[in-house]
Amino acid sequence: MKLGWMFLGLVFPVMAFANPSFVKVKGYDLEYEIAGSGHDVVFLEAGGSAGMSDWNPVFETISKHAKVIRYSRVGNGNSTAIKRHFTSRDYADLASTLLTELGIQQPVIFVAHSYGGSVARDFAAAYPEQIKALMMLDPSSEHDVDILRAIDLEKGNEEIAQIKLADMERGMSNQYLDFWSKRPLPDYPQIKDMPVTVITSVKKMENPPNLFFTDRGRKMWGELWQKWANAFPQGKSVLTEKSGHFVQIDEPELVVRELLLLMQKAEK
Image 1 (cartoon, rainbow, N blue to C red):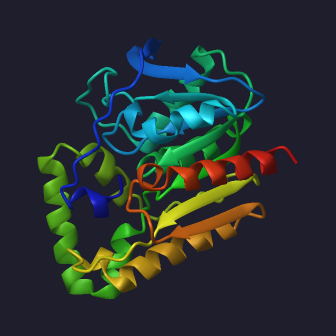
Image 2 (cartoon, helix red, strand yellow; image 1 turned 30 degrees about the vertical axis):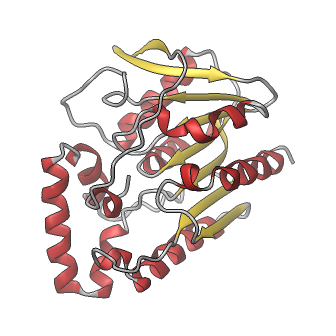
């Protein structure tokens, strides 16, 4: 997940999922599940520290329209536990190899949530031949910290310092400090022209815990991803005030509907 949601102390939803399989990828055991069939292959990338069960609300429905693959990144779910530092590019490399190991030869529709959005953007830039469309749900952004600083520089820097400490206490620094440290900011201009959809939560809070969740912060967050998505000739931005960070849990019907539209666009 992006930093703003991590320090809220949110509890990740715990859900059971059916009979995962395991495959060896670059020496790591990754759990995965494949369901459905069809012309398209949908590849699901979960958020930070999350396993593949985060996709439970939409996995079965998607499988009615396409072959769908979900997995847990190394260090998450029941995949191999790790202590070393991994970057979003490292995870993207593993995702590419995973698809090869699973015998997926056609380009996939890559769907990512939260920190998975950082992985997805690295994947799209590094492996254009393996992706034909991209969908991100409230994705992480290197510009999170810039929003806090733009609203109030001094207070923003204080909150950022607190967030970093909280993340490291939870053992999350490998993922979150990864995209905090990216300077200059990678806007991934090398991603090819393809259908892109970004669903962004701009849900307002009555008592925002920090600057990121103030009304101004929510507005800036939505505008950030609107601008990014609309830079693609086939890009689409969807803002929602009905969902929190877990869009696939709060509005699974929205995710499926937009995915089906993206799949249609990818075929044109």
